Length: 634
Image 1 (tube, rainbow, N blue to C red):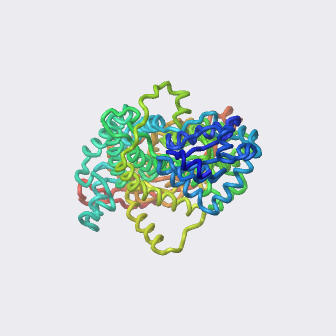
Image 2 (cartoon, rainbow, N blue to C red):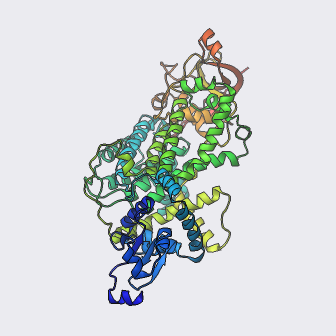
């Protein structure tokens, strides 16, 4: 063998395989794409076998690799050695890992089992990977993801713009200027900017808050129409972070930080240029991994948090008995879902746990299983949309799920031309992307390990390094844990705010979307998020938070910006002399009661949530929340 190869040396490695095996031909085609012509693949002929001394039976059992050095290997080792010639760095690294002694031993066993069961393996191969043999591409996936991310940012900024002055203006519930001035008194210089990164350090006026939302809308439209996508999404991320950093509880929802995380990853993978189309180069394997890791963390975090919380409703499969009734802002669909039989509710609870703890692992599975996960997650999000109002969370979850697909799957529904082939990414761009993505990958991976209950105690430098990295990244809010409804609320207390001029006759302030009048049907409001209505639900679950006191103070002051957050003002001629908060227990009416009375809810008064308050006398700065005092009643 060595004599023949020396007389006719090979310029590139040669792979010989069984040309009569369809399963072998499909995988050879895939390996040809991975090695990009650096390895020659050809069916093993009789004269090949004669020259190399390979028996026909051995050729049928395994492929053989002949390297330029004259070395001949077979089976799993031949596969890994052939792939080590690939121009793709990720493929070469995977191939070298496969040649490690323990890994190679296992791979040889798997290869032998597949070789003995080719017909069954071929069926499984088609089931998992489809009949396509080319490598998966993601330029169209990136294109669609960026367009839909622009739509999500547009919804977020439009929704916030309708409320920003009532929440954060000078006469709002949580004035941004006060927040920044308080931090400036504690920290000075760059440290204040690091702890609270926000453009509103430069100007926190009402005009600046409104202009920021309008700028966000314009940038969102630019991203939606593929205008300078890399710059547009980077600016969107920084602008939304500016609001979230100073927004406290009204901008502390999981979809707010998820949007920031999606925006950061989008900025890392978006193509450059003014009108890049699909982009010259394709997303790297690291880009795809980061997005799929985020999909995994989002769903698996929600599922495992339910199991780890020890909540009895999830353990006993009764969570859906309460979920539709106690959702923060229920819908009509949720009201009807609450009427379904208890057996169906238990099955629904089990299905949610299964979907959120089992299906996330399919994000790293072969393409057909990933597509299955995409449609399953899509069905879950559609059900949530129909039965509850969760802002733009469901929209962004659907958008993020596009990274479970590939271009071939998307082209079946998007009639777009393939365009020019992707160009190789410059080495410096790959290096910069890897450097920028490494902290995100490290923190995301650590968060996954924490979910499994395992974090290394040694080596200590690694632990300290992760802790330092997490402390530096925390103000950016772009790598986060996720876990919705880990503890199910089983009762529905609701706060009704009332005002009075004489302490005897009280008028109720009605909210636009919060549960109040028992005869008013639940409303569909998503993807808009009324943030005051949402926080009222949280406030009812505990003692009065600080923002609630500020809210009552603004009502006594008659702030038009805060009154604009409500459905109506029962005191059009001037603010009341005092306000109070009353606590009620709400339950959904059943079908018979709904037909008989027309009510969607039944309620019972529990008592005062907060006794009557009035404005305290004395001057105060015009941009400060007024002081309150208790009203003495006989």
